[in-house]
Image (tube, rainbow, N blue to C red; front, side, top):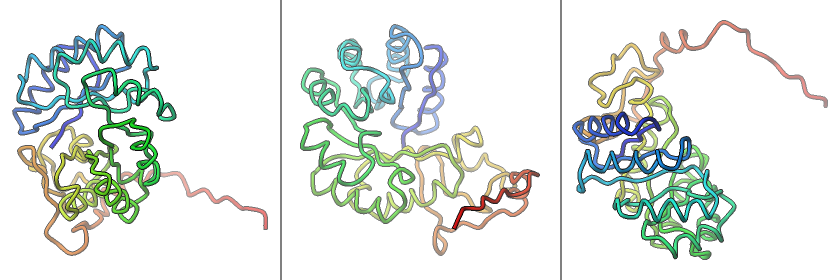
Length: 257
């Protein structure tokens, strides 16, 4: 599995990277674009020095660079052997992504540029990406995600299954999709929402009375697996739900007829 490292001071990011690797994670994603360019490069350098060359290191700029900045930054970062950079330029700049892809050694993955299965075809035809990010929530559920994966397999393009920061009700469907789909199962997932919510890296460290579900999908030693129960194996933890619901009454909007 992959672990996402939030931005920060290079030494702090490197130490979080070490903890993730020690817990079995095989891919690390470094978030960039929030600080100075020099600090972003320093963070990548510190992570690579800390974990060595055998761990996959990827970058996510969230579309925060324009073309010239992305070109300069990736030329500086190419020597660190990144597996890919995610959405280096804005989502609507397919031309910029394609130009960039032809001028740097680091592979380019599309995230925000791909919202629908047909977007994937446009990105590939433009020569704008080496791979794409699959977010179950962004796709709108399992049915559309399966269509997306069918198109990705047809085009022979890799995917990374990612997620938002959410509960087990977000991560469980993603785990089922990854193990049940032949194309998806070839690649890494970083759908670790419950771990981030609970501030840990293993399911065994999550108290059962603190999650929205009475059962939590397996996250242990850098691997994940769906629950071996009917459906997604989830059952709402009513006590936790009541604590999270808040005290404000529901708001009703009356629309004109």
